[in-house]
Amino acid sequence: GAGVSQSPSNKVTEKGKDVELRCDPISGHTALYWYRQSLGQGLEFLIYFQGNSAPDKSGLPSDRFSAERTGGSVSTLTIQRTQQEDSAVYLCASSLARARGLGREQFFGPGTRLTVL
Amino acid sequence: GNSVTQMEGPVTLSEEAFLTINCTYTATGYPSLFWYVQYPGEGLQLLLKATKADDKGSNKGFEATYRKETTSFHLEKGSVQVSDSAVYFCALPISSGSARQLTFGSGTQLTVLP
Image (cartoon, rainbow over all chains, first blue to last red; front, side, top):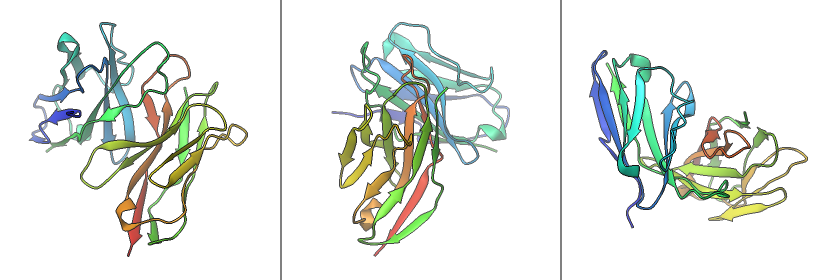
C-alpha cells in the first residue's frame, strides 16, 4: 500500500513569504507527526496529532508555525513570514495509535526540503 | 524529558568490516528504543526496535540490545556492505508517559567503501 506522502518535495521561497507543506499519512493511521531536520539542530519534533484530540504543539519553535489536520487525515504545516533559519527538511510521519502503543512504529514520508532565501 | 546521545560521525569502513555505532540514553522508566536509517535521497525508515530491557532488536544483519545497566542501545553489524551506507539515528519517546513523539540522536553518517 501507499506510504506517507509529502508535497512539495522541494520549496524555495523568499524571506517573509508564507509557505504550506502537505502531508498525506498512511490510510488508517490515527497518529500524525511533524518533525524538522536541519543541519544545526538535527531532528526535532514539532507537532503531534492523535485522532480528534487537541494536538501537542509543544515542539513548534515560534508562533509563526501552525498545523492543522482536516478530517483526521491530511495535514498542512504552515510557516508564516518565513526566515532563513526555517530552512530545513520537514518530515511527516504517521502511526497506528492504540492505548498501549508506545512501541508503535512511525512511518516517515520523504520530506519537503524548504529553502528560504 | 528523555534524551539520547549518539556517537558522532562520519564513520568510514571497508566492506565486510565490523560496525558499532554507540547510543546512550537518559530516560525515566523503560521506554522503547529505536534505530532509524536514512538512505541517500530517501525518508527515515525504522531499522529495528526493542521495547523492554534486555530485548535484542535485529534486522538486515543489524542488532542492538536494550541494556538498562549501561543505559545503552548500541547498533552493531558483523559485516557491512556498500549498500549499508546511510545515516543512522537512535531514538526514543520524548517522555516516558503516554508520549509517542520521538527524540532523535544527532545521526551518524556511515560510508562503506568497496
